[in-house]
Image 1: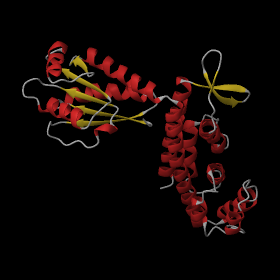
Image 2: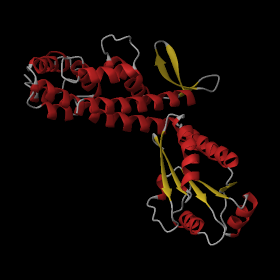
Image 3: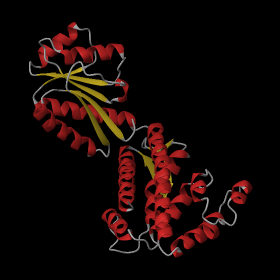
Image 4: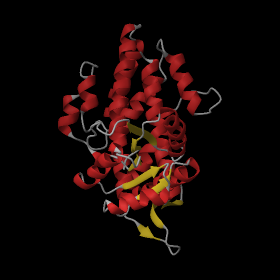
Length: 322
């Protein structure tokens, strides 16, 4: 599971669905996950890739129900292994009997009553979330997200430089000087070919430079931070989005510091982690500021929250530069 929690839901009653699904969405978002509910209104509606969903929720109307039949067939044919809830206004016992006759084992049943159904859905969300909070899975989520963010950062840099070009050009000159005298000059991994390709960088190959593997996440975020603090036409909108997230009393933006602490540090800790267990049975994966980093549900929740926060902030920056 990644940052997206996906539910496949068979239900035809619009008002009832809108009411209960909004509560489910709120619960999942409170776990620092993005939620996507694919609603199926008709039993004959085609669904692709059942395995993409964390749970399947099915309204089973006992009299000639195409919903239930479609779901049952999918569970059998698609070998769907995640959790399934069948619910019915006919009551728990009746639907359990029908499903037993169908030979379905290991599925959950509920009355249509929200007081019974909602807690069951919540418990299955918690269950799948606990399963996902392994160091291997969280490491994958962080790596995938930061790779995507690298692309977002590059796009923002290019958009900012377009604005610099449209103005007096002084800001663009400062950016080029910063790349030459700071980022490339202090490049630790002395790749002669990389440095030769971009010696005396004049800005013409900025797009190519941003795509280079050697121009890493730290270099990109430093360049973005530098660009954000320059003068450009949409800076007020950028600052508004920034200070909505970081309460710094209107001081100068320091996006780089926050991103390195909240995202890149976690990525490095997880990438190089050699887990050890403390005497209390806690998983130790490193140190930060002299304190042990313990891999647990709280850390996973914090990581997810930060990843979603920066994804949303990058999108706000992008909208501000339109």
